[in-house]
Length: 267
Image (cartoon, rainbow, N blue to C red; front, side):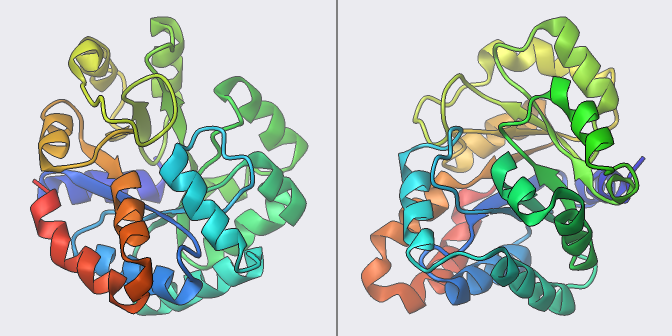
């Protein structure tokens, strides 16, 4: 069991649930991203999922596409993310960060090299939405990732279209947390419901100690409460970037606004 998995299990025992906010790096600028992440950590986040800007984010909805466009206007560089993470790691030395990025970014930066750099600055999990579970082992072997992945969890998805057999296979292999996608489609939709997924989540809990975390469509306290009734936690991202977007004209106040709103959004 990886350290990230153990830490999240312990955090769930202490707090009762796992809150994992998603923040697209550089929206609206890197300085404010850093300040937002600090507010989220101090507001109770168990990890923060930091999204690497990408021109064609196939799993992300319109709000996050716009967030990425704003970030890419600032000439996004992987080195800048590593620099921010280094600063965060000095401030919160035991906090486990999660990086979400599309495969091309990892290949461009050098898969093994960038994962080693991420690990050195506190990253303990990665999410790569466009690499399916079937391809993971091939890439781990091809890119010589086995050693670095003893410290970083490669997070897997289970979606409403995942077969029961495949979901069970993924659950048995899971580390860090298991990402339960609440509906078909991209992030940020307004049709959140876990009713149809409850039997599957219940069956998965029997197969793994790895925390089950619900993402896609968690926009408010009621959604978060529904998620933690059946799973161990939730991911919340689009709503944060909608708050950023609505406050662009007063950007320096955005971290304070998010910090102030957070208690009303959480169980």
